[in-house]
Each structure stands twice: as structure tokens, then as C-alpha cells.
Length: 102
Image 1: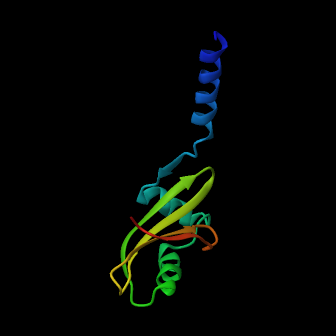
Image 2 (image 1 turned 90 degrees about the vertical axis):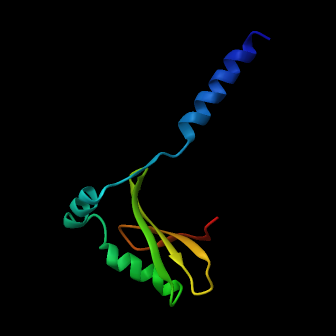
């Protein structure tokens, strides 16, 4: 049974290190990345998101860095009154996730 605490410690460390870390970027960082051509203009990405739900209204857009990838998280309110959370690759505009927000 002496090995059990050591095993639990190792498992805990592995779980902690496998959790994806992401951080929100401020507008200055976003502007710098846009000027460097690393990410697409926000307007272009919002247009892609809104194109999925005609008539929807933009609620929020956040830029995040996640393991070296820049992702815009866009929240929309559809004409049906449903809030959608759409994640787009900020460099390519590819839709990564589209789900109803809780």
C-alpha cells in the first residue's frame, strides 16, 4: 500500500499536465497579430459566423491562444432566441465548433 500515494501523485501530475491551457488576448495583442498577418480580421470571422445563422446578432467575440493556435470564440443570438457559441480558427476562418451555449 505504500505505492498507492506515489501512484496517485503521478496520476494527478499527468492529469494536470494534460489539461489544455488557453488564455484570452487583449485588443493590443489581437491588433499586433492582425498587422503581422497571423490572424484574419475580426470582421471577416464574424461574417463567417453570422453566415451560419442569418439574422443573428453578435453578442461577444473573444480571441484566445490555445496551444499555439489562435481561436476566436463568437457568441450569437439567433432569430429563434438561441445563443450559439462558435469557435473559429483565427488564422484560417475554419469553424472548429458550433454549439448551443448553456
